[in-house]
Length: 291
Image (cartoon, rainbow, N blue to C red; front, side, top):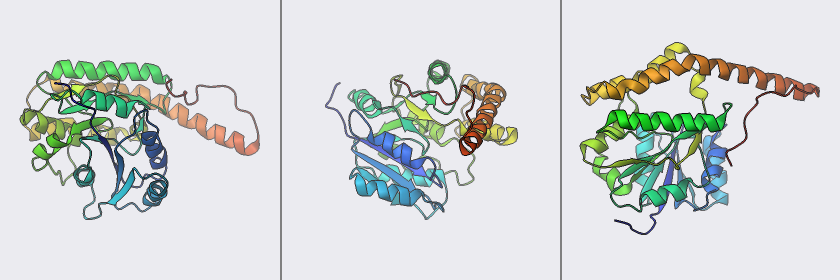
């Protein structure tokens, strides 16, 4: 069934994101089809995150700043934003996400199909080289995940949306994860599947995100990846196929971390050269945005 285009809210949980939040909100504003609203939920930030969003809200009526200071944590902050949103479809991205200009348009188009309860898409790592190649690789990995997972259609927290009715259906069932052990987006995906709600993968629903996770130590990165296993165990998911992404993420960490380190070193040299007025030889640098 096809209906008229739904109103799309964009929800952004944020904690100490003063370096990223302005560009995140500006990208969400710079859309071919405007978002119904952009809600940034500040969670006890001690930097200028809230002040920056308040400045943007004063300039743009569709931007809203709300506070979730009762509990420290991503899940209660995410929940507060999704609960406060008034759109027909609730987008959810990270504070370092940079939405492509057609993102809201693509989300609205996907949810014109009334059988779609949730949607997700690929990401392009904007602070890594070969961004277009990276987007294609990410798209293929996610489509492979869908084929392997079979009964489960996993959403990606940096680039996802769900119908407001679907959120209300699972709102009281999603795990609160007080000990911060799970992947909250996988948890939402599993609760949607358990409720018989359908998620769709939309290749044209593209968001940019930072590869800053690669700056984690090997131990911290492994702990992050192992959140998959802990989330599956919580939901008694026994399929070996859905665990394939864990091994993919672990395998790509060493080479990508080297690339990330080289880029960071070059950025440091560029800053020193700028301060001294010297020219830096051509190098990979940060690739341009996708056309």
